[in-house]
Image 1: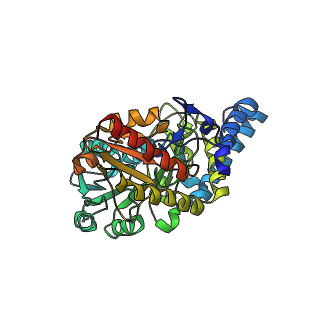
Image 2: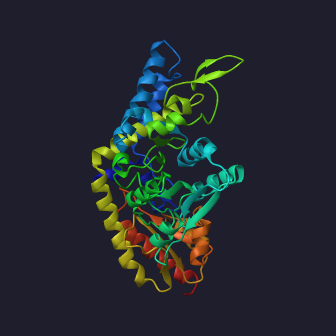
Image 3: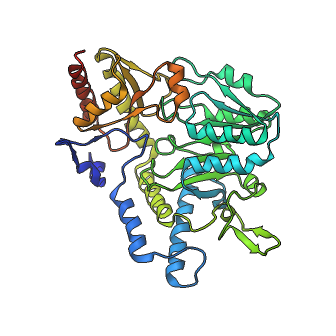
Length: 401
């Protein structure tokens, strides 16, 4: 597979075995073009952005703002001012909760689903504690799908925010977010979408979705860690107060009062992750060159192959069997703890994630303490899926199953 050569780390061996990296839902590996672009910034252009008149600063600013343009095109935002650079999905959601959330009052309601990542639960719990608002939960089915009736029943005249995952990180379920957003708007609520697991795998068009906010992380999208994106409709962002104060987010400062910079800089206080943003721009350019439709088709084929092999392993039970799924296979194996499964797989060179995946309510819903999660990316192969299942045979041998 030609693309594998773009990723230097895939040449590694682990415990003497070729690396089979199937932990992409946690973080993806980085292509050489991203690594080199970030290094080139530090080697040739390192300077702060927006604040200097010297050549290095202007070059750094051009590269940083060029990355914002890449993101705008990637999600089809109407304006570049609607793209705010943050540390990741978690920070983006916290920004909305802390800033937009200031308008909530006792009795207002926030609606999420039962499949959310902790990053789309805890910020809203904190907001409810501060404001007196109430957190509502739409349930999920035994297959790991949204219970549509539960979602619609919990929408009401007091709903102010609907915060939903596009793709579940623990189950792989793809939610019907466009329809959910329309329902939220019909009840006068704003809609935030956690796109951390969607952006690397599915085409995202924020204008077609009509979401008010969309959040995603660079490190899952073949980009650097510590960089992410909050998309917000310009009118909403304009109406929101700053989240953090400091340099670059201000227009004028006196001891009496301060005024704020234009979008998006009002929400980008202090020196940003310049190299990370530039690296994210390179990653988006790389993904765009392949095509998200092609990536999705390849990953879906891997998921189908893995799903077909699963019944051949005695005692293996899939957790999350929704018909509409992204490239995540979560499972439990007999009464073998997920951590033990992951340890043995690691000795076979197979990297998976084990645990609750920052989705403890999902584990509680399915009555398991943890799952093994194999998640696929554009550089994975059917042979690597076969290697995963061959390693699971070793697990059964070790535990005498």
